[in-house]
Length: 109
Image 1 (spheres, helix red, strand yellow):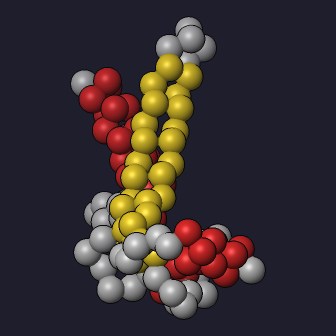
Image 2 (cartoon, rainbow, N blue to C red; image 1 turned 90 degrees about the horizontal axis):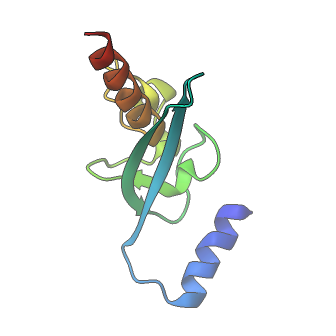
């Protein structure tokens, strides 16, 4: 129902095609000393109608990431969220975690 309401609201507003969208995830690392680091991951793409796929949750069946022919709803979790070397870090969550991992590894040197 939420996906249909979203699409209908875009239609009512006359939103142009293709309907660009993005998923965004933000991770905040706060140390006991009060130091704060923010890591943001963005997955750009577009919305499709009708929804495709039953994998994932939320708006995954409406969202087709840039450079791909399938929606997040059509991709298994490992493909969306898997980190290298097994996955490509495609999702917004994976991209935020990759930035966090890179920061942690660079501080360990």
